[in-house]
Image (cartoon, helix red, strand yellow):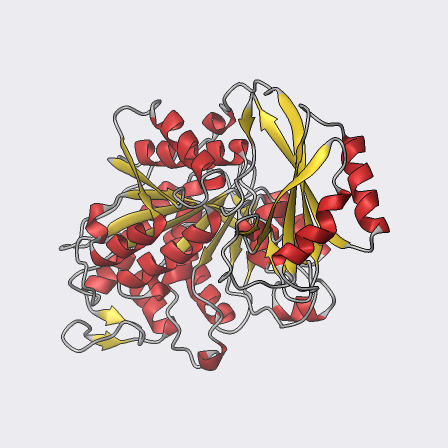
Length: 481
């Protein structure tokens, strides 16, 4: 008898129980070799005092099975609660989010009948790291973190995915014209790794025009790899272009664990009515079956689902006269898929999957690390101050410069306001004072001395950022950037 694979399943909230029932029914009928461990997750667990939406037993199950099929979650509003998706991705090391976005023309209404795009999104870094601080009465900051190892892993995953799935092109979406250091690093790594895959075309686009072209001409794209925030936005755009976000599944892949889910929410307004579309979670389950080496069952389900769509059996969210023949509820739709197990679509191309479990050994092929020569050359000191004009602040701070560190510029919300600042800049109570070394590299003690002078003068500094050169090149942006 072939191996039975344990998987953790959470029904979630809202329509979650209904669509999970439908998906488990289809997988069981198709012969999926699973041992299901159900765990509670979502709103009720949050309300029991678990800020991540999953209790210790649930986390224990996932770490044991290493495979998690998750229904949609409702997160109660309240301080301290965290998105289960974000927590799972960071806790379990699920660095890659994979979203296939395919049009099902002519059976599901879409303006883009030839669309077949996969969005691969970095999951652990960027602004979604959730590092935020209130610095002043007026200003809150969110920290964008991009690392070389994190970028290498997601880019290599994208190219490996393209190679193993016979894709022709990988496009990076970045904003390196503005975020020259963070997005610039990601793009540099993208082309370094692209050189290892000469048979795959590599290109990049600025994310705003890239998203616009994706919305207008998605057939121009094949695989898109991008950073966390951009990927979240772009993947929802792409899913909607196919005709409905209710059709899209999503995989979150790590080196040891994986999570699979529909991309839609819990839809409490239709919960309990038996009309929800289970297709998104079913397509996520197909991705799960491929991941655990049951590609034969995945193909059996996916082809039956395609045949069901072809036969015009549609749930209410995609039903349209002239395209759909039967408006089916959740259970009836699942039954229709089961009835077509063993069949393949006639108009749409059938699918096939390998029964070999995918491996991610290549993700550990990180570039050799050579430590740069790091020299401390200054410090940015952020202040809360509402005492007047930029020149007034300079007059207050400039005398506090030390023999090692001199005030060279002041900016407000990244706009340089001293010296020679633009008088039309709108200023808040959040200021960045840049102090640079007078005579070569400085020691940390010089920064401590400077901060002591500021404190003694009654100046409220809220944050400091050390300024360093790496191999002689500035590791920081200029004032006004």
